[in-house]
Image (tube, rainbow, N blue to C red; front, side):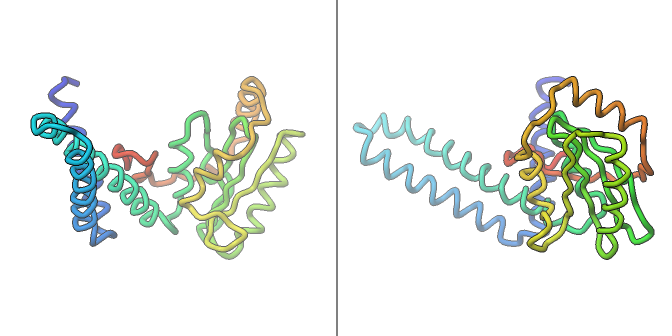
Length: 225
C-alpha cells in the first residue's frame, strides 16, 4: 500500500465509524462541535493570558486547533465504541468478536449450542480456560454440561465461567473485554500452548459465527471489520 493510499483508507475508516455511530447517537454532530468549541475556547484563553507577544500567540494558535481536533477524536472514539457495543448487544456471537480482538487469546466458537441459540464458547489464555455463555433460558444447563466435559480434559488447569447478560450475576457484553483482561495469569506460555493443543484435539460443535464490527480500543481506529 502506497503512502497516498494510507490516509485515504484511514479517512474511509473514520467515515464508516461516524456513520455507524450516528445511527444510534443522533446528537453526535452537535456534541463533537461543542467539544471542539469549548476546547479551543479554553486553550485559546490560556494562550492569551499566559503567552506574551502577539506573534507567539499566533504561533500557539495552531497548537490550540490541534488540541481541539485531538479532543474531538477522543470523544468520537469513546462514543463510537459505545455505539458499536450497543449494536452488538444481544447478537449471537458478540462475545466471539470481542475475544478475537484480544492478543494472545484464542477462542473455539460454540463448542456447545442448542436449538434456542444458546451457545458456550471456549477460550484459552494464560488465565486458563474460560467458558463464555451467551443466550437465554436454558443457558445454565448448557454451560454446566460443557463445564463437566471440559474438566475431564484440562485436569487442574484453571477454569472460569462467564455468562453474558444484563443482570447482577452476569457480565454485560461491553464489560467482557475488561473482565477477561483482569483475570490473573496462572499458566506459563508453555502450559498454555499445551492446554490449547489438547483442547484443539477435543474440538466441539464449532458452529460458524457471523463476524461483525468490533471496537478494539478507545482510539479512532475502531470499529475493526
